[in-house]
Length: 517
Image (tube, rainbow, N blue to C red; front, side):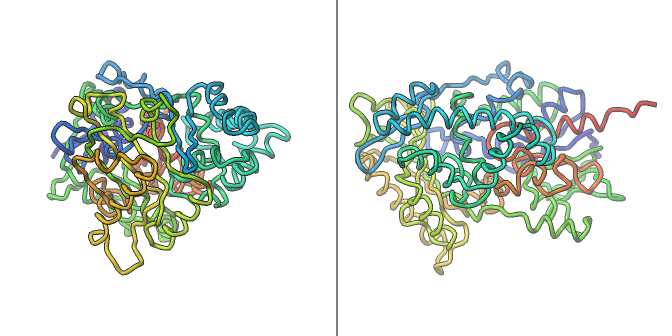
């Protein structure tokens, strides 16, 4: 029987990050991935001959704010990034539009065209949130401290303001900061909207400030597709002696005397290991792979109470003959409008209405849209003169309550989304040559995500920091000895950062250090 120092369940970017650090430390590491490719939610696949799509994460931001790329020598293993600047283009139904750039001053000049008040407010917004994000950033690469300790990092009146912003809603913060929807709406979509949350919900305030990080870190994608990030991570793991097995489904963690001693695969194969690391979401890890019989009943209840999204998006991937031509795009700026994500979200009320319909189990009549055209800056993703286009909705429910199934309405919903894009870019219909529409149910099957929740669990203040995944187990450990956790369901949460993988590896290596005599 094979025996390893560490088995990592899942070859998503956090699983591979953790495996990379462990392998570089000299551990004999095995990574088990149930799909036929590595990457999880950070993958690139050829859906049509010659067309390569980012079939998970569409942009990369957080990964540039930490040590993972440098520590794992990912550039040596073939990773390069392409900067997206302008970072965002937001067209509006009234014919106006807004570009966001990496440069704050350049963005402010853009905003001045629409609202001098909001231009001034934007500078204050970026400055204040940069300070808060710097405080929060101090906790990103360590097991999360109790929330009270995080607050104590701020001083005096500033601490009170930090508390207020953490517990209030994104909508309240944005409405008291900006006077126009030209700022409120895209920032709401970039924050709580991206995470499948209602911008009016208490506890989403923290996500209202996420956009300020874009100016600090930049918005990029990996040359050749974002999956090249995980391909480089996989090369790192293998270079340092690790083994990665795809098409390997873990049926259960083998537990003896409340200690993880290996795993059993779906084919019955048993593999022994000193430790096991799961990058699956907490519910899958504890309720399926470990099993309630090995856990205290109170712990099981807490895991069952974890709140996660009931679906996030309907996704369209299309091979197109030309990029979207937005009627609201200023003359001479067509090329720039396709560089970064294109956001269709006229107002916070529009986003809220879509959320209410989603919450009620109905595909929104008019969802907010996140559009990506990475071939605009990376021509290797499509044949000459052609492009790849991805559209994600916010929001689309996993559970339908209209008596129909997604198999019945998938294509109809896809047509509805294309029609909505056409209201802003009329050339979209004639440009589509091939198309794939995926429902939340399809995404769950492809990505093996519980109800296709990219974030594993809600990113609200009561499920972040020391509350993630549950209070008492935020330090990447579990009630089962030698079973560790990583992934988006651990601190600091979702988004492509590699921080959960880095932090879990750090805890594991500290635990493996011999105790001084």
